[in-house]
Image (cartoon, rainbow, N blue to C red; front, side, top):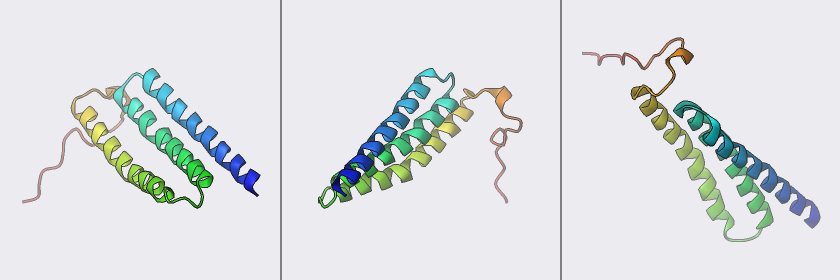
Length: 114
C-alpha cells in the first residue's frame, strides 16, 4: 500500500510539472496578451493542484497538509479574478487582436439606468 501511494504521488508530481512546463512554454511562445493569459492561468493552476495533491499524498499524517490545502484553495479563488482583470485591461488598452472577436461586448459599455 505504501509503495502504491508513493507511485501515485510521483505520478501527480510528474503530470503537474508537465502542465506547469507547458504553461511556461505557452507564456513565452504565444504572441498576444490574451493567449498568454490563458496559458498562464489554466494549465498552471491544474499543474499546481496536481503537485499539491502529490505533496499531500506524500506527507499524509503531517500537520503541514492543511497549509497545502490553503494554498490550493487560495489559488483556485485568485487565479480567475486575476485572469479576468488582465483580460479587461488588455481589451481596454486595445492590445487584443480585433479580428479574433466577432462581437466585442466590451466596446461600448452599457449606460447606467436612471
